[in-house]
Image (cartoon, rainbow, N blue to C red; front, side, top):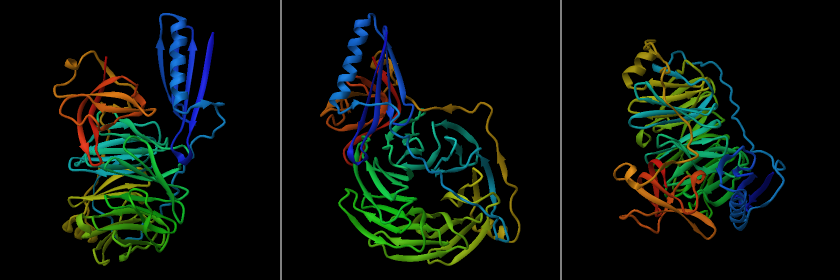
Length: 478
């Protein structure tokens, strides 16, 4: 005999839209759970008797009911809305082409990019995230369940925001879902600052989620189609079809709003200013303090992306006509060159290199040094190297379970033990090992939390706001 109990949890304000399904079949209990509209994840356990299987199922159902889950009819809720950015890419009108050093074709349209001291990261709409060294050699591939909207860094943690509504931590060998965004949020862009997630969406709403994946606050903007969100310790900077606004980090209210010349299509930030690329062929630099427009950088077509060199000494932009620009800080155009392969939907500058992700799904490395640009303007460019995938490239998929170890001694030396505890109806994670603040919570993937379970992690790092972040792999302690 098979019995199935299906429950859903929906909270006002977009805090939760989840399902929980328990199926009992003879001695086996299967639990399927996740966001409403997704297939979710499944765990299966076997018991010595049918009575014990029924008792285990009843316990699981009871725990969820006490947390606010209620019986529901599967399929009555619509799946998460997903908007793909509609872009066009015309040929460049520039007389010369940028000095491209190497090009890596990801195989699908791509938006996400991040470049650090050692690696380049690129994510595409097929759910692939590739890491390459700065010389263009592919090192690894992360295979995520859905298309990658963007890649963001928060200290040395790297996150990928996906169309399935999850934000995956890619900092360890195996990625895991660190945040799960409400189904009614049609994600356009996101940023993470000190563990707090900020999400901008299609309807022009800003949603803020804390390090424990719990809804904090949401606020509507004056426009819609919010393709810009950036955050620091002083404010959250948000851009939509009507302009750019700064919001207090605690949701206390709007600090300022500045109408932009055209809808905002991309955003960037430096210490004292934010940069908004607009549909009316401009990048506008706004003072973080009061929203005042400090400079304007004029392009020849709608701006799809922008970036700066450190401190904003140089400002870079890319338009819908496959061109890339460089401006002086005061707005003087220094050069315009063709990308040689589509319009750049995202970009980043580092160490005299400009990295572009283009409409044809390529990661492109441009030599942005003065000598290389001058040579390119005269018609001399290097032969771009076409980067190929290695035959034995490692592929990493998200972890939904933790590898078991029978004792702490089986874990790597110096590892840390954490424990799942139930507090006010919520499962939280606290550190057990000595030398840590036992009252602080640990940012930990919800998919593998189980009340009372203990886990071994490679390392914990304290974060502003009084919590720990996991660094490295997670193992279940039996």
